[in-house]
Image (cartoon, rainbow, N blue to C red):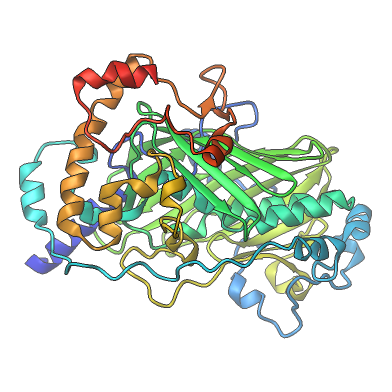
Length: 512
């Protein structure tokens, strides 16, 4: 029999994970996608189960590799493409193979002259000593209730909102800068390869993150202006039921937008999260890529160490010469599986490059349609596309990445420029970051009471301020005007959503 301390630990992990995954069924915890369209590649759970026994392209000979072992040979050089076996390369792939370190595209990115900006390296030191949570009391008071509806203490949150978490998908935006330059210089294949690497790069930040982000209030927004990356990002909670977040990001030569919704399914000891919707990337030369997120399953809710697994097929549809298909391998009975592999194909269906790697570590490519077994494959011929940034030295229990640590920072002079709807002004989240746990809990309870009025606000005709969509089957699109209003400091039509709200205020909120 388990000891009492073990039982407490297991229950603690269970409740934390339920919160992390879906404290409210509508809540999406990553940037992850909106409504179905013709380009959506997210399958139903039944389709996913049927495909688990199938392979993406019949190339499963390379499915059992260990990335870290295979890519540490002395002969491997990051970013270089060595002389490859002509039998494994198409003629077109040969002509488009480029040394990434010495390419015109890389030089152009370095010449952008993005400013160097110093950002914080850690969260503030806690003001209070964190107190334990009486899980027995929580469970006793909620016996027979749906755990996804239980309002848990702020202890189970991390100090960022879901709107800020959406921006984490842009951590490796340099891949899109690189893709833009490759396409501009006429190398559409390397553009497609870098887009594929970018689509994978949004996943490693989920590793080890057990606390849930704050669920934004209806109308809550978040801006991120990162001149050091050459990008500016904006997001808004556009619907409360179902919960949908919309975002828009502009970079040098490209735009990225999406809206997000997640369907959740409880499967005994695990939770399955199925993203709904499409992410769109458009370059200023008119080339567009669209894809959808894969399924995420959170395991070991009852016993064992909790972890998440991303699995399924990801189709990246291009409107010109190339498209890409990736398969995120599902875990086996014996071990976890972070492997990702797939291919790029041209409009005729010819495979011109093979991609392989791990979603929590790195992605590589080899020109041509590789059909060799691991023992026969020469890994030194592979080219590195993307490598995950190392985690910060002083990790907290939130396990935030170095990039995530910067998302809620209020730099000098920034507070005066933000609208009253920005996530960084949310009091419970700010108190949690500062380690003021009692204040954070009180503010969280107050804002949750306000949040319960959101459904009525929406039913009374509330509309998003900065996004719109033509129909329910379309993606929310940015209407424009936010950055112009910011420059003028005009937030007259932005309500103080973090203040007190009374029934009589609903009509005024709708009018705004």
